[in-house]
Amino acid sequence: MFPKNYWYVAAWDWEVRRQELFRRTICNVPIVFWRREGGVPAALEDRCCHRHVPLSGGKLRGDHVECPYHGLTYDCTGACVRVPSQKVIPDAARVRSFPVVERHHWIWVWMGDPALADPALIEDYHWNDDPDWRFKGERLALPGNYLLLVDNLLDLTHLQFVHLTTLGTAAITQFPIKVEREGHKVRVTRWIMDSPAPPFFQKAGGFAPDEPIDRWQIIEFTPPGFVRLDVGGARAGTGAREGDRSQGFTMRNLNVATPETDSTTHYFWGQAHDFGIHDRSITEMLFSQVHTAFLEDLTIIGAQQSNIDAFGADLPAAVDFNQDSGGMQARRIVDQIIEAERAKA
Image 1 (tube, rainbow, N blue to C red):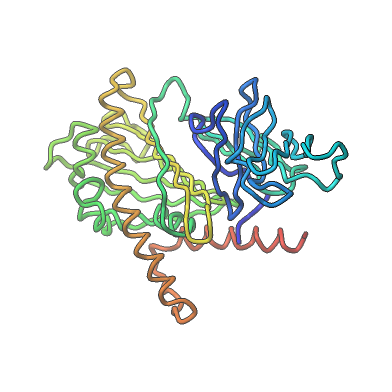
Image 2 (image 1 turned 135 degrees about the vertical axis):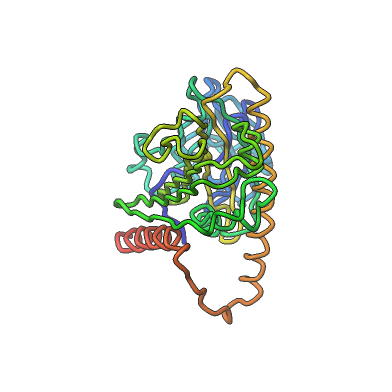
């Protein structure tokens, strides 16, 4: 049920360490990660070929992984290189290995055909380590399918109801969205003109509670679950819509929905800003505000997934509205990719 020939964010760079084995499930597959002696990350299917015990419970022996049950040892390619009880190692004694790349403070893993794992296909999240920006992020455990999170991020009308104390105002639903599709990219744009700044924007941009601003939400989706937001606001009437943002501020809200299972998701996200970059308190304030809002999203999506599971096969088809156009396009793209991969299998 997941696109396979894609790079997925598996972990933050600091989560995968030397001398430690790290287990994480991606697309229903348990994987063990570690760093080789030179610091380069590696990844294998997290099971021993002998009796299927998790390798993540074992030990690192140089660059190799030793199973905790009978001591079988595997190299970075997944080949068994030592069986303590015998000298001859069967050719079948191996487990699956995964291409891994470290970039933008993340560990990326390729879940499909290794021959297609081109690092040039990794999504652009340069804001994470761009010296002209400051960034802070985290991983949240989302109790829902990853496409529910994609829906949530592409339809920000919920800000008015779920995040009224942080990101939302009563003006959001008064302004229409524009949805564009270019190949496998979906862009959703909304301008909220001449309206009060939400509490978050008051803190970030120094706007007074009753000061009108022109606010933008420009959201881009690429498969399987990458959603990047260009958000900000400027004093009303100063030309922000025409490109002059000098009377306001800009941020990037950076999101990755990595499927863990059919009904759980690794939610990697961060907030990046290009103003006040030498003031750490600004970074912390921006992160804290969005973190609070995203915990509210987890509650909503978790309840949504629980209800979907409870109704099961009796769940009626969802009714879609204009605000769902971006999410519907994203889901069509994912469905088309999955069908194309099945056809080639």
